[in-house]
Length: 495
Image (cartoon, rainbow, N blue to C red):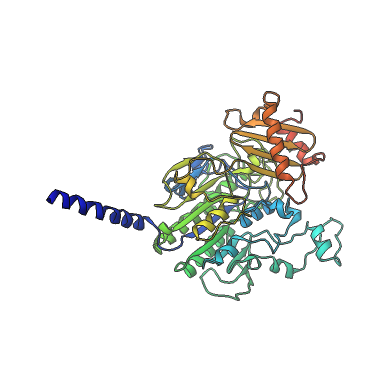
């Protein structure tokens, strides 16, 4: 009888114990979400990627050690504006006509991550580079919205300052911002955490730009750590103009191109910032209730097709997109291309206690997934307009299949699709390529003649996707001069 009572008692209490254990594993309230985005940062340049020996990123590597490092993380375009528009909207930016930099701004009617999370009670902050407002190359937008303005001799337009504010982070759903790149910022708070004009005021900030951006992120955390928050920290580095102080340059002695030394130094400054952010989360005792994404907006520009990658004497302060000192190894190509070097980037997710520590995930994921993941974690209903997926079940092995049946790209006169191991690229109407990305040769061997049926299937998938875009359709024009140099140099232009 005693045995029976003990068994009954155990059976009654075991489910309660399991529920208690499950509850204790859940974060208290909605998780905070931080997106840290670097700029023109190639795949090779985290030491946890184990591609190059000169990079030093111990704090970012710690994120990978405590979370999940994605080896097939992608952005939606190999250029700043469209890539950021895809991330911030969670939709392929070509759906709303933002195909390249000159087709900014991000339309005000597009729902952004902060606009979505606001419905769940989140406060949101943006720090650093925004780059989703109209810019001097947006001639078509100016013709439509500012017909009184005509392009200058350089073919560019002078956008009135009021429009930069209209399309700023504050105009796209953020509650607070410290928006800027070098020493001038549209800010609602200062680096000490003091409140400024809630509508934003211009702040001139002396000091090293990457340290300023870290300080502003820390100030946002100081102001908002007691409530659910979304922080978008977009470092302006290692994008040109290259800039570093002796504190960081001295960490990389020895012979190397000065552009490489400056890129390493800038990434080291960003890494220090990541460490300070982690320390702040621990100080506020919210590190186990905060999901951090770390990624880049596109691969590094190399200018290899113009013979400038090894130009050791290229001036460090030259602001053109020749080479920013970062590297895309082992992938082929560079910023501006739909080869892996242009679109495959560092990608880490860290959420202590909720994601498996030290996991390496090799299925393709996208910055489109950031919005969908945030929406799910905030407890908001799924939105079928989002093109990404909630990655958490995939990373915790609750779901075994790949997050995406296919990922797509269209940029300038190029288009591409990746499905499982296969990647198909259309280079204008001049050449088509098929690659096995899981092979040692990846994009160094065109397999289109060996597997024409695979190429036909992927071409049909790609056409089905491009028919939904604005404007619809596959690229049907010749490559531009720059594109032709890229594809001739890296792949050759013959099928």
